[in-house]
Length: 259
Image (cartoon, rainbow, N blue to C red):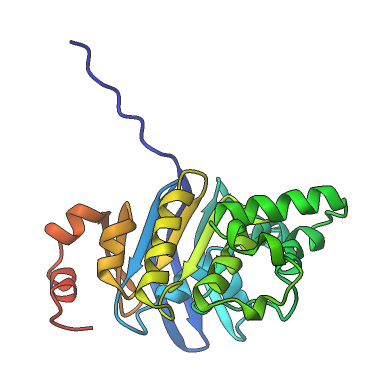
């Protein structure tokens, strides 16, 4: 019987020897981490451990903070985005970001989703309509809002607002979706919808999610990275990390001894 060849996903990101300082504060210390294509990578750890700082380096939003210094390599599809020649507009078009709390613009539902394509030069009305519809379908929001696309986005529920913000990120046709605690402000029903959505979206997109919710990480992610005090303690496939962590600090964290 012929051996079955297992085709492993390729890495969208390869982060090597990454260090980041905010002024004198050494926030990230020698991070080495790969993020596979079309998988969900969960980043866990106690507050202040560098999770959000790390995810913001992946589209260089960290560079918006004064007095930040970064060394090492952040290779996105083989190119080190820390090079000065990196086009930040193009990078953030390809690497979308969703924040902790749904933050729609005080505009219509349609204009929220169309915003990204418009600033990236899409002017054709039919194409904009198609982009908006596709993004809203992708986040399972189209049927709920298709008859009120020109109503205020701020009139949506909290869970709907968060899905709208995900649609806004998807409308630029990114490769990667970064999510920083995307369900921490939501009720359990809305949280479940977002988790189901992420499992569906990974068929098309690479996802990295910061979460305090270890049950969430174990439910939805393919690999999990544990950060502590600015260091990456370990990164393994999720089942192995939660069932048989290699480091005692990971074990202590996931069993609730600290954090």
